[in-house]
Length: 126
Image 1 (cartoon, one colour):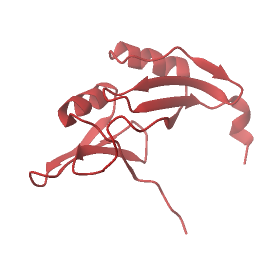
Image 2 (cartoon, helix red, strand yellow):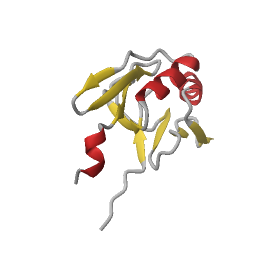
Image 3 (tube, one colour):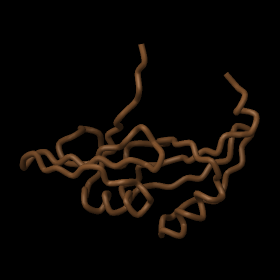
Image 4 (cartoon, helix red, strand yellow):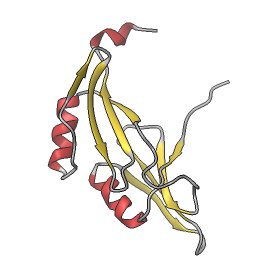
């Protein structure tokens, strides 16, 4: 039986500020629905991803900024770093490791992301 990760809740303090940040970072704003005064659901999807994130009000009890090291795979760490920096995102230098090349950034609440360019040898793994 397949299990496909579809949605990850990201805790934020200011939904509009977070939405603007993620859209500026290149995420697609899929949905923005205010269900009630207690619930607002905003779904954003990174380009090329089958999994989305949800920000909003009344979605999670996690503390804003508590997610550490959400990870996405990218084809080219140099290109994504340049793209994000060009969009005004504060992004780290490239971190070269034996298991990949990484770029890091955080949203306005401090939820941290790692973007990994897989090493060439991993193409034939598994």
